[in-house]
Length: 216
Image (cartoon, rainbow, N blue to C red; front, side, top):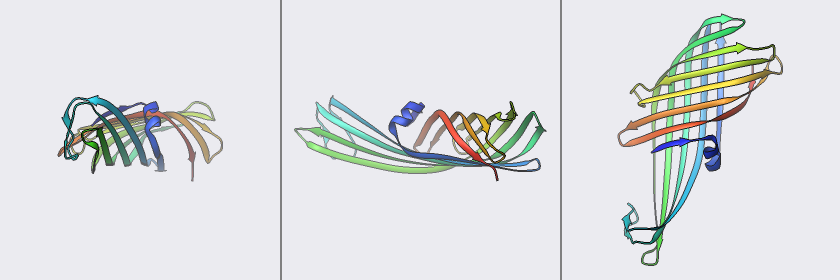
């Protein structure tokens, strides 16, 4: 399965989802963790079609049949990275990171074919699979004013150990309300190309992000 979903595509098919990002630092040692869950449903109808066979229906589909298909897809990722702050100045910070990202993918497909010769026939299939990707990454923070700042973070991974490759990038502009509370707006891209034992997951998710940060 190959998918390239824009933000509008995801929102049209969106069921439920969420993203949580946690950061910690002690002296120059840093820790980054995040979790993301996305559930989408994509429905399609097509007809009339020429004769063909759908596995699981039990009969050949005659010419002129109409077909409805629904795909429910669920994606869960969890990343954990540790690192070191190699540059730490009032005007610029740079962290280098290393860790891993866990993936769990679940897909359910339901197909219904209708034709006077066979009536209405239905078939469904579901599968799920998981893997872990090693990651290396960087994170930078640039103050603009006392209230505004830029945050950029990126990582690459996979390297054939889990997926063939994966990468993500996040850029936000942040506004500080107080010493503990700030708001962020930006853009995030997450890409993965996984092929193993008959499972194929080639997906890119991208779109705007909004968030609140609370510092302990």
